[in-house]
Structure formats: C-alpha cells, structure tokens
Length: 171
Image (cartoon, rainbow, N blue to C red; front, side, top):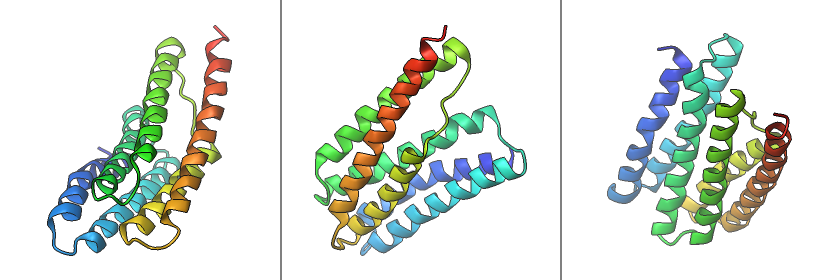
C-alpha cells in the first residue's frame, strides 16, 4: 500500500472517530473540528503525493473521492442531527452525489474513463469545509457559507452532467 492510499484509509477511519467525538465527548466540538480538519489535510496530502510522486492508483482514484463524500455527508448529517443545519442541505447534496456515482459508473463501464474534478467542485468542497467549521462552532455566516457551497456543488454537477452527456454520446 502506497502513502496516498494509506492516507485515504486514514480518512475512512476518521469518519467514525468524528461521529463518536461529536456526539459523545463532553465539549467535543473542538475535537471533532480538529478531526474534520485533519481529514481535509490528509485529502490534500494524498492528492499531492499521488500526483507529485507518480503514485496514482486505480483503487486510490476510486476510494479518495468516496472517503471525501462519506466524510462530508457524515459531518453534515451530524450537524443536522444537532439542529445546526437544515435537512435540505443534505438532501440536495445526496441527490447530487448519488447521481454522480451512477453517472461515473456508467461512463467507466462503457468507456473506462473518469471525469476529473472541476474547479467548481473543488471550490464547493473548500466552502463545505469552511461552512462546516463555522457551523460546528455556531459562528456567524455558517449558513450563508453552506448555501454558497451548495450552489457551487450544484454548478459543478451541471458541468459534470454536460460533460457526461458529451462523453456518453460519443459512442
């Protein structure tokens, strides 16, 4: 197992640790936020190491975004369960993510290609991370940042959808 894939595995292990800390540790919001930030750092590191040192693997290409999506959806669900964000944020993001997974699977099965992340998707992820930290600590503008992240995610989804149809109609 190479270092980027190990870091992705660590991110998967941070998910239940976040949940436990967020719900069961007294004054656990700070610790949960640190775990969430650590997850983001490992995401950046594994991508950098994989590309910079030519350690990109098929399994890493599959598991890396899955770890990201599971972490963000888990954290958002946790925030909703504590009434810190409305459910529609999770619902919209889940529809987008499941649609993306289905579309990616179709494209990969048909043409063995993957659509790379676009800048709007990367910006959405960054805004989700910031909005989540703001929401965990109940800081002002957390909800506004969450809406910006959601709008960027929707924009990224629209771009992915056009790219999917463009590539899917080639064959």
